[in-house]
Image (cartoon, rainbow, N blue to C red; front, side, top):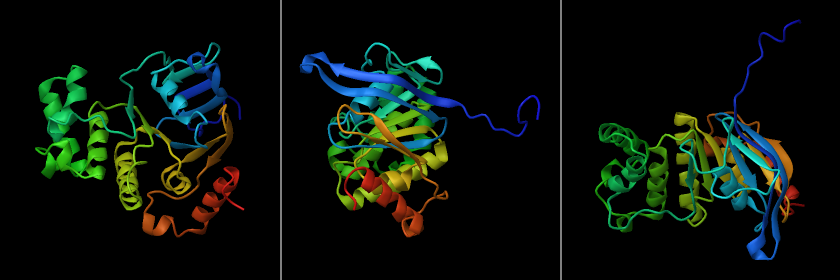
Length: 264
């Protein structure tokens, strides 16, 4: 067919990482990353797995614009060079940064206030997001009055209220017990299915990566490189009661486990 395939769907690239390496001179020249290349399409949910110390968090911080790659590497978010933190990107770390003297609602409002969002618009967003996070009843509570899972939901709210196009998650549930972590995985998936941001998740959990993701990137030991880009072809929407019982789910977990040296 001349003129291209009229039925083809063009997918916008949200994150483009090219030739990205990182050497920390302050650590006696430790090379954390070595020539990392990958791209993520708009609305995709992608997880990164890899052994401890392979540079996963360093890579996420480069994508966030918090640190810069070595010369020759480039990260672009929606076509723009990510040389510093931008309003298109929100980051959630393993440890929340809620102010202990402020209420849940005040903490969630804070990032939007700093960004200069109009007070009336912040009010509207708060009323939208609290029910989604299942925190409406706890809006007047302080962080110490919440469970660990509720604090992490509030930490997500701090970022989601700014309406980022890209959500970067660095082991946000890693410090929680297994049951709470599983419950929050379901909540995260529900939020993503409603809002459809582009998500990049750093995790050590193979089952978590398979359950949540469209693709899983596997990194080598330090210096980190992408050694596998595995598409997770499981139907959506996903439910833990049915998705994890599928034979394909177990096969993906097994394949990724062998790649990471924890399988047969």
